[in-house]
Image (tube, rainbow, N blue to C red; front, side, top):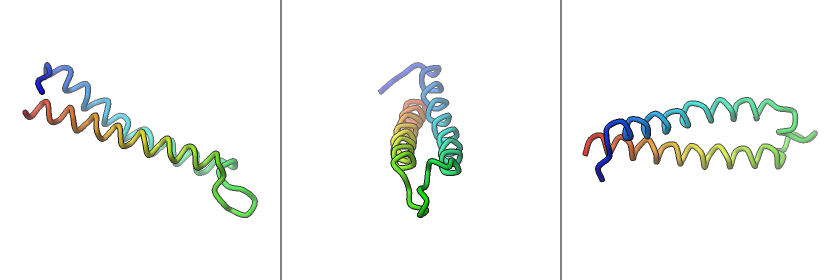
Length: 73
């Protein structure tokens, strides 16, 4: 696949943005009092946000990889 260099760079930047921002968000969510119940178990609040972060990281990695591959090849 061929893309203009500017689009490839945009894909890399967007992917890296996701890989940098989402872990910081998850750390904040994990510290939130709504993340654990009185017994210390994970709540739905935490579970939903963990799924959101995992999916976003996977997509970020895929986008960054696509950007790098279009730059190289």
